[in-house]
Length: 314
Image (cartoon, rainbow, N blue to C red; front, side):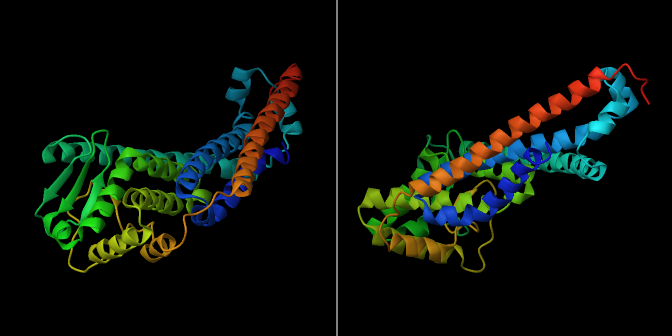
């Protein structure tokens, strides 16, 4: 337990530091999937080890020791975790549980708002809904029966090939369920703040994923780059208040820098990097292995305390 129990926290810090670079270097679909899975696994592992660290101190309380039939003195004598570390871990578990619950509530509320917006817009799943609202550019409404919303002004201002690229981009958001990757990344970061850089990295990866799908659809990466630049600049124009709160997947999002995405489209499609993927997978294996070892060490700790339970509880 001396080392293993702290390894998931170290891996989370390294993953959080590497996430933006991985999102840029890996093919977008690979990056989005890998970072989301890595974030979820790492967040679960760090939550587990924090709970274990906190419980080693809670278990020394008389009522808990009586309930578990182990010796308080025996547990205290063999417990390798400093009391300060247990207190800090316990406080972190409580605070992070509340933060995660708040993020989950916000995501559920946003999902309900998106569903209500789809109902109000009418049409069928994945359909394009053209509106005259001057505050709207183009975005996908993430829902099980999502819609694509675009302003008539924007569509009329784009050449046919760029209009096709924009709609292919938004369709990719819906078909690939990119909002799910973003939600999981947000929950992972809420559970473990060391993963906070994972959120913009996954947002960037999902936007780039949609860019690449659009590039394949129109057969010209430069066309998508021009469409992205045109719609992105329009989205950033002053005096356009956000009136569509449920629209979580918009081109030009904060987590997807416009210039970087345009530059990526003007270069060849990103190549696969098996070595980078292998490094992340190795980190996950290390995290899971360390969590399992920490569990075994904890079980041995309590077995020893239980075997000495013949001593008076103090």
